[in-house]
Length: 303
Image (tube, rainbow, N blue to C red; front, top):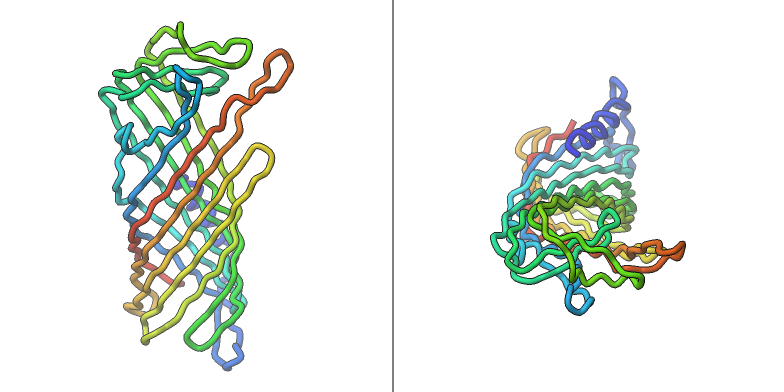
């Protein structure tokens, strides 16, 4: 994902002409196209879970990645954002966050089944040792338009897309189950063998939002954005909330420091089905819930 992010940035930069075109605003001040690159860190207090099946009852329940599988709850993680502002009111932005975690669980506290991964069901039993890996990359691309502008403020609306690239992996002594004719798999005869299970999911979620900025003191600007979307279409049901409040302090002509607080929550459910005798039947819902809250710090350069 790092390579993809920088390829996008370089592609946008390659479209810049050798000299920026200067335009006159309504205040007769010169306004030029502007490129802004933020590089920084954010503190994530994470909460994530997924849905599994009870091997005794066939019902479903959530397993918490942090509490049950011991993935780190608190992390400092890299953050990049690139913004291209042009024609005085238009803005194109790209940002990327990466949240990679892994942990060893010496003894799993409860039995559960991972259903329909590569067409198989897997049983993880109480007391088993399990290595868990959860990697999430979040790419945000969008367009914003300043509706209201003044000497010290701007307010606008945005449309865009958040794409989550989710990879989960489990390593340990895991049993393989075979569903019966009703697709009810209780794994009563599963044989535990060393197994590696990995699954990937790409979840694009469009969003709409509002943003604003206000220079409350020379060189000091308050920035905020809020983005939201919820969708239910075919076998996908998802929602997204992204809110950020921050302050930017200009330290010289092209350099600034930014400090913000971010709340991000996404909940995605994908209905899983399997074919049995040329009949498509529903098995269970693959659910990923992820949220993080925490401060963000970045160094910003304008060119």
